[in-house]
Image (cartoon, rainbow, N blue to C red; front, side, top):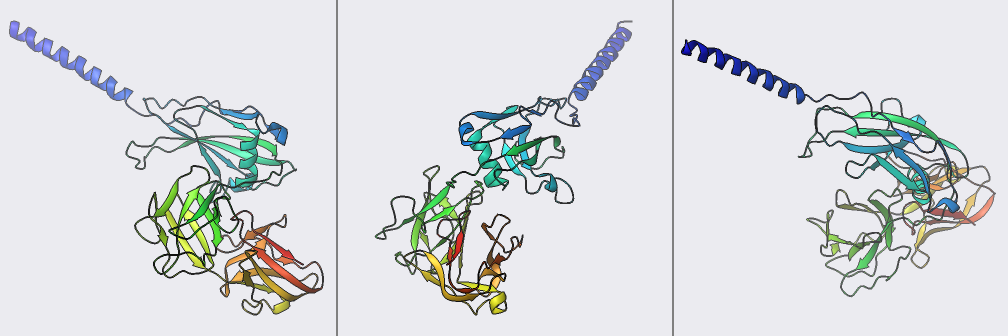
Length: 369
């Protein structure tokens, strides 16, 4: 009888243990919500002026999604224009702002929000535009590896009217090595800028007086963090606090691109030309000359005809070329986007044409005099 009782007791305990384990397993099942609930904006129509620079103009809030288990999602706000939110490449051009920790709201001052709209989304100023803001919640593994859990989203639409402000882009300043003296303060021709405020910097440099082993020697100093970047593991990589960057041999005037996320740097020697209707779109017939004093490319006595078009090309091709956008601002026109419109000639005559790339990306200009 005791043996029978013991067997029954063991069976009951096993059953209870199985039920308990089953409940534990059920509790550990991750359930992906269909969206992020409660995603909202404190303002659906924002008109910005300099008077609102330091004021809080918009706040985005949401309720922390319930995944059924204890997880810490990563939240990202994505800002985009309606035309980029559908199709194969939907949201590919969105400006992304990651929220800190497990915060469930993000506020913007007028100055920061205006900068996002104008400098990153490239919206026109002084007019009303519609934008779409999407909140993305995703689960990432502690190792940083990809997860099989799909992100969830919620979207709000709002209208905005940004203003034109004097823009000072984040920059990397050129600092010469050894006996080569470079400007102590921010100076055109000695900087790379981040026009999209995204750790990617671009500019054009001419460094004929630099010293170094067979070429130029310099470092790059951030205007936002004060960090100094130099030689990494090769001529095309960077490291914080590294030695001088050596160019062997020096390429002379060059287009320089830096990616501080990837810690890379590239140099492309360039010479510019005017290509257009008046020279049958030749990429070599109308060369420009670099003026080291003004830091501009210049072409004198250029015959142009009113209503005709031209662009700035380099190195005999359109791979590094410049046109204008809808606002008449000079923009990069090479691959992969091949953006911009041909520059219109306003009058017939003989002109001095200049191309100024000394102020860094986002502030390239030209003139016809």
